[in-house]
Image 1: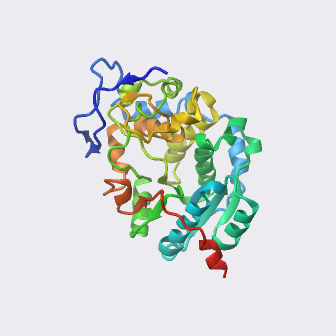
Image 2: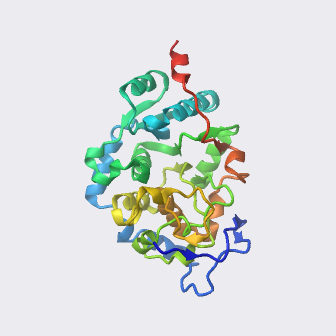
Image 3: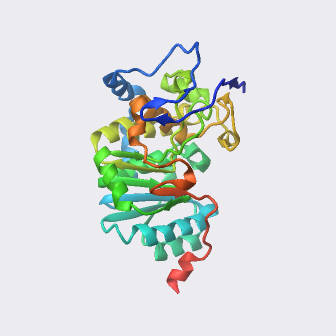
Length: 329
């Protein structure tokens, strides 16, 4: 695949402005300054779930218990030890201060032994993803089709908030403060500085599906999809979660001529479309299309690095091989 070389690197949004923002001099497109125009674009048929797709998600949602606040995570067997470490953190930091939260864990392929341990020790509601209801490519877990579907299904059962977190997330202090921010602002995004620019880590086919020019999004970083809090409002559902789920259903949106190796964004890239982050790429385009330079208002404060967040941090090396057994002794 031919890569287009960018002439600059990303500088983070600061108070609604950009520092030496990346921009092509010959870019013929820009995000509209008209908020209503941006919203109507997001609500257009291109991003609208069909009745059948909505029905499938509703069927899936019936496996999720109704609750004011629903906390979500998911894992397969190869991330079981990371998952145990995450649960230990939840039991230690989150559970003591939140009494009205229901934790729903999505089993993406645990062994029978792992699932039994989880059901006994996790203090969570364990469900399985109904792959038989969805297109065959949903079984490719690395493409993360399941994530926006899971979050939207949970929102159908949440009265107030949905929290999604990957197994690498580590909660710190200020749990109730963060949830209060989410309640007031309706959305909280975990966006450390100096992530890849959106078009650097997104294949061109996704922009084509969404009717966008990649250069338009060069000034903006990707929004990590490893942690977020969504409030149950019609705006969040219709303008963020439903369009994201729609992209997951459409092969040409989430995986446009993509292969598993495209997900490797660990290296520093200067070329456009150098890698592809699937669910995260779609999430980033949609949020930026919707909020433009106002997106920073929904970023969690004091998050300079993944490892230095005020409320949560990312620790991909954290594991616990025996936490569930220790609980059950």
